[in-house]
Length: 331
Length: 263
Image (cartoon, rainbow over all chains, first blue to last red; front, top):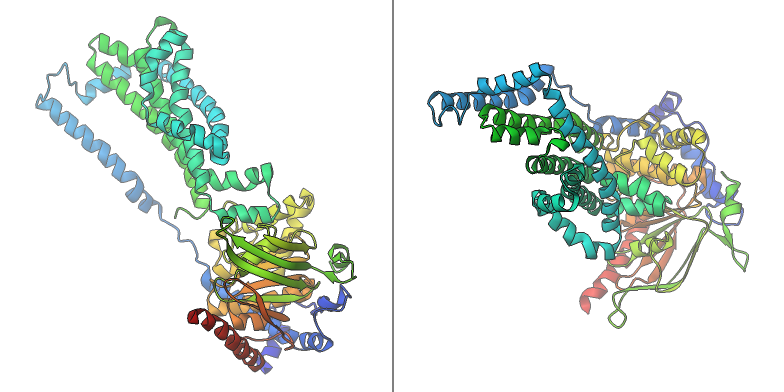
């Protein structure tokens, strides 16, 4: 015991307060600790305490893992190089197909021809106009979809009759290609922006709502019980426990919602062309097709692809990584 | 903290104060007609500052009883009174992974209406109480199992309740960590004067911690025997006194379990 006594004087003994036999002292209503118990506590307290602090610190140190730092070139090698190589490979195959005339040149232009077409739009100053027309429509339609889809998803997830009534319809709508709505929307709304937004909403809202529903369904019941125990009930429970717990599922719904919004928008723009609608990427594609301008068609397809991927990589990926990493779901 | 005890304990007609009072509680699950009785006629008082362990084999309904005391479930018959809303700790830490350790504690304070300005300081005090002062900004996944349970304990203490319910909180930990947490819990119980109702199937753990051990039978759960543990704290799980009483209680528990095989 001698060594334990000396340790008690060291920095490990950060608990100088003597044990209070509060069981008897505070309530006074004759319970709990007997006098003998209390004496035992104070007498032996010092010894147990210093041992405990040291032991605990040791356990904590042993069981906590230090995060390893990844060198930058590892990151380049593992994350950047593979997709760059894949794109290069596609370009080589394309160039070879052009070279050996798998299709006649007017049907399959070379990568350089397509790049030239994009470059020409750049020189004319129209490139960003086309992208902006589509992107602003997409963004606006998407924001509206989030505003509608989120409460809808919450309602379906938490109110059983609502789920029984529209849950299956919502899943069905998600599976349905929203391009099918375009002809109907044109008849209902005419050739204007309303048609385009209607189609975008019908594409994106079900994805976002379903994402939130599955996010909420996957919340461990333990979190909800823990929330109720600390008094997070009703709307406070939704705000402080349910929604944050459902966030990973909701985020993947948001991501998928963007993909659906973007493809619905392109479908709408390709079909609903009119001088009054302005020229987005979809109309650009359709115009190039009517002019038999194959480099223009391929350039428009590439731009649609690049914008879609760009938003995913620049907006959704970082947010998702941040959320998952902070929860230890991503290493 | 000590003054709060008299305010928050419930005084009953006969003048006795208690932190929890369970009166002739029965609980069955299933449809009426095809009911499965889980608990039968449980009567149990937890005095202010008392540490009671509920002990039983699987199927004795001890967790069900704890859930009812916590207000998460309702008894079929009988009544339960508690002094305010009890704090509850689970076998899993149940900490929210989207918050840091400190924010987990703060959320409880916030739900209790503690003003924002005080929350941070209170949370740091509570973490210090479980010796995790430096863990305020740590994410849950960065903590070891023992540290998580200690954060969970300080979150439970943040409720400033007079009664702490614990549902096998150390069952998933390794032996040494569990030992350390037993000492930690004893220390905190002595220091805060909180009443504890602790559910476990581990006889030694019950004897190591409790002032009173209550043994439940299985299917349906009934109180079959009670022991007062007069061994002074701090006890160790390997103390002879703890071992001797554990042998006695284990014998009674085995007897009870064997009874089910004979039917």
